[in-house]
Image (cartoon, rainbow, N blue to C red; front, side, top):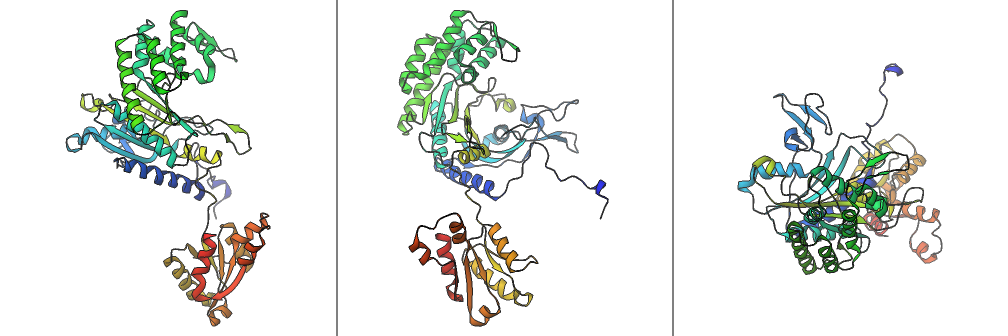
Length: 489
């Protein structure tokens, strides 16, 4: 054994987490359910590699001084920089540009898998997490946006969020551009300052945003944030625009927005696109309790080119201490017509939606809707004697062939410790096959699920306890039926 001072400390890198069966089962169930929805809509699965050439990723470009800025990058033996993908959309843009001539157009794909970001980790913010995306590339129709929104709503429902537990908020970047033109905003810097101010509406409220639209705002710590420099009239127009989302139905919201942006060419184009989205959503049966128009939604300030949407969780959730917690956004997306052009030089329309699988699983758990549930272990066959190992494995083979998860205890402990092991594994039952049982052609089954239920205080149903013995010795041929009865109970 090496000296203790030379042993490495057992630790996970910051921002990377270990996940056991319960977390993995919940995420797997979400992906299974959502994938079924996406495929029913006609989207095909696509999996691209974990690494992309860094210049193809676009958002973070390593340079000579900071080759890992924002991404985890390494230099290949041909001296090209490769980086772990930071999302699933940049690899899609590369794939589409590379294979455009052979793809069906529009190209409809969904994808899921881990992504990596070399950023400072924090509470709920990891350097590795699982995303699930669906995108349509090659259609400029607003109806393509509507279908993505409808599919996102159905996917969230399939994942365990009933109607009323979430809402998808929809806006259009062209409305914002029309508003800014009406307000006299001409420079790119001022435009971004206005959009950043609007993006803080939920946190700061109208009065705080009004300050950021004007000269600026001093926060509680005394730090000053310079404002966008709008005059009072223009700032009021921006706030009136963001307030149009409380008008009522989607059609009423469009009417309220039209009164504010007042005939700007780009704004009118955005209104027409939202009107077409509204008609398509209505045709698809997506009601205002699932998707609304909200002019305050701002996403990807320099990324999205048209419709933008954000899925917000409405469920009441609590943390591990029972304290209320607000999850807010669990996914989002929009139209990004400039991404593929980075490779081809030609504008290619595209729209998509993405959600964080781990984040959604955490939100469901906090709302008491955990899809993983308690991680159930296998039936454990107790091992008494080395001489009877062949009989134990024959039995466990029969159980597995019948579709029942099972294992032979392979530790070195005695009967009591083996039963404790089975309980710790959350095994539904333990099977005892001693020498007497082998000779008599019987097995003894101990119902561990029943024991846990009784210890939890489930003692008021006398008939149920009578019909379900905690331990029984039965003919070997009846074992699978007995175990299925326990599993199904």
